[in-house]
Length: 124
Image (cartoon, rainbow, N blue to C red; front, side, top):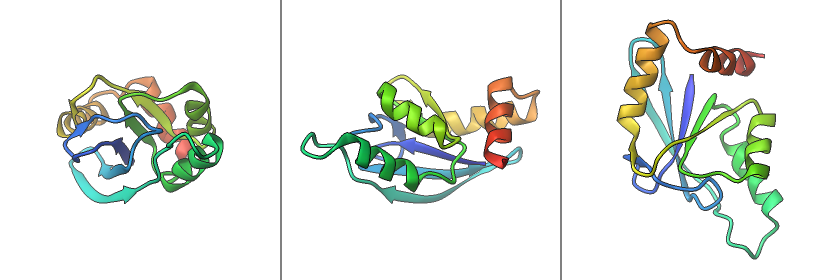
């Protein structure tokens, strides 16, 4: 499954979805994880209609199952969920590699229902 992370430096989840410039994409499965790419996205700057930028950002990660963010607004979260992406808010400076290792562990050891549902929703 593809997992997206809003990050400034590619090592920590340290950015709000709307303000993010970069989204780092990994592929995760039971045995390992692989960095796929860094996608540059337009941050919301207050001078442009939020809805348009949100939809463009979500379109850029439409192939992902999970999205890890430091913060996300309610309307943006609704658009993310509508596109069958499961947003996950984590504490500032959460290490991406730690998250990937935890996901791999969960996939191997009776995954929680939210993860099973996220995978099933993406496959539809």
